[in-house]
Picture 1: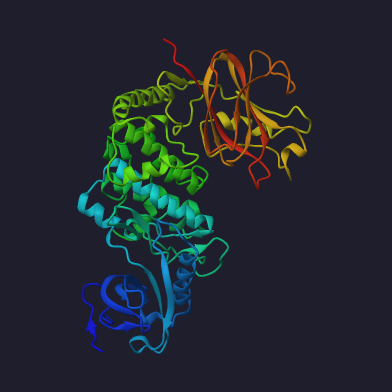
Picture 2: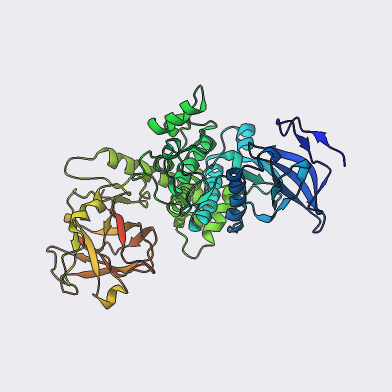
Length: 523
């Protein structure tokens, strides 16, 4: 057995197992990278005859019970995940007397990903094309969503932990400091774990972290992909961490002017310091980024590289929310791009013209279709609707569906069991006085999956449903987080009612965060 000294891949100066056989199966071929707890090697599985990656814990910390448990936890965490954008675990074990250690040395065997890290790609290319950056962000968000659904928080999202394979697809790796949300100890003692260039404010302060911490870090990664640099620099890691706590990220549109206002709003939301204003979950991040990719692709008239692959995945989904313009021919895409830009400018102009008597739609509302404009609603232009008895449906919250803030929401009361077993439905209405012939309604939900209908009333608010005063305008089935409902737009209505008849499966209530009406632009 021949031993060499690692000088490039591992500066710890320990003996290298390159050229040896691990567990009588894996031939160690070369160092891939090293960290404070482990070294990653490229190896060859002599049984299945394929390349693999092996993470070996450093022998001098194998006797540290906390570090050993963290390493074993990574194996358990990743073993639960099976996703095309997560580097898959193949095997795990412990080798006795490895490199002469008196302690068993644990190891994890991963699929070997040929390619480069996202960090290396950014360093090599500088700023990435906007659609490409969005495509990678979507793939990373999908990986995080798979982890979050298993109650696993990555806690160290950074481009160094994202591999880009030879086909251009992103794969998240290194769940070394991940932990489940119901797990205590190890990382709950106030220590700051993670790279401070991408650390969330709550993590920098040593507080409990959840999925929203990963969302913040992903937002910083997206910022770096778009601008070619991290948002903050400082004389040391603590200085950088405190900037994440105290300072807003630089304006991405200043550093990259071609970034759309819609994408800038998504990024701002992902990196909000206040958890109440930060994007609430990874599913919402995916939806927001997919919409931003649709807008960016329509503006440019084409898509290349990984953006093309991601767009194909959107088209293939049963409940795809990709705008119709992305399903048109390439020729129509180019022509429609200008209309999207004009519509976005109109939306921003209307938002800038907010007055005391009205509010504007949230910044991340989808741009209106050509020829449409969002309807200005007053700050008190919403009310709960519970004609079938009870104490109402949180009337004090009704105004929150027209406040332009997606973090706030109106909620139905809590119902144990099917809603229709207790009453025909509950709802919330918006008052578009003196009246408008709305062509679309956009409904943002924190609890997707509810069903019901949209009704309109011309002058007075009817006291019951059904009644002659209400006109049914549309059905809503299995609503998404961002549901855009087509309305007839033929008659002017003052009141527009969202009537909920079925709650989301497995949920005892429905939460709506925003209701926005659209109408044909006059003139």
